[in-house]
Image (tube, rainbow, N blue to C red; front, side, top):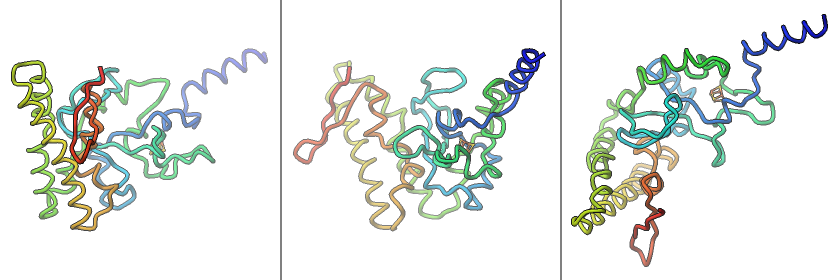
Length: 229
Ligand code: SF4
């Protein structure tokens, strides 16, 4: 009897959230159109969001491999350089915006991923959905996307192994320098918080370039690329 009860309890537990926090410690959710209201209302401030830009290689949790993003993917940041979601309270082991948590958090069941797999790549929220009406700012974001697109970056990276190596190197460094400068300028001139730049312009290319086996170093005021193997 006791052992039967324990078995039943175990089976029930496998079909409900134990609020252990494991999911929240593996990284924040991606946003969908249904979550726009949370950002519009300021429940989730934009400074807690980062953008994986179109074409950027990132880990696809459903396909379990690195793939280029087919559109913007907006995600909640982690806290203190870890993957733990910025809204997770480590002390109480709970979500500080539980009533207003994004759709992926509501749908995710760690014991059954069918529901999350169905919605994962659908109705992704993009920067355009959120800021295309902000005059001046959206033009800056579009200009950056045009100049620093991952398609162009990837073209130059692939060209490093051809006789166009010097041009490719120059092209990559120009993209990285522009990406760094635009962030500094926007913060200096407009007074926006530095934390917002990961949302506006995506993750800094000086960091994401490592996914492509390259690293950037500053030497005497100039940037140089180093292969990481
Ligand atoms: S928003 Fe809440 S439920 Fe979702 S990952 Fe963050 S802490 Fe967890």
